[in-house]
Length: 57
Image 1 (spheres, rainbow, N blue to C red):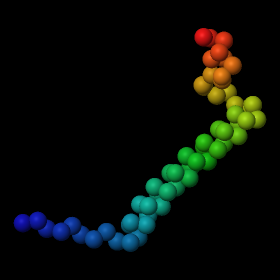
Image 2 (image 1 turned 30 degrees about the horizontal axis):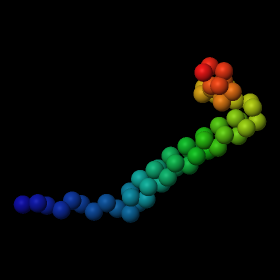
Image 3 (image 1 turned 90 degrees about the horizontal axis):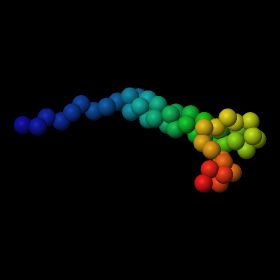
Image 4 (image 1 turned 180 degrees about the vertical axis):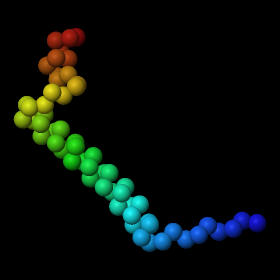
């Protein structure tokens, strides 16, 4: 017979969700920082710009 699992406490649930949300915040900050550095021209970004793609073709 199937037995129900134990109920997860609210604190464990909240801690797990807070960790998940924090990861999203960190990734958003990285993306914003990269975008700002590309716009200011201070970035040594890996992907080629559109000018380089046109000359290679």
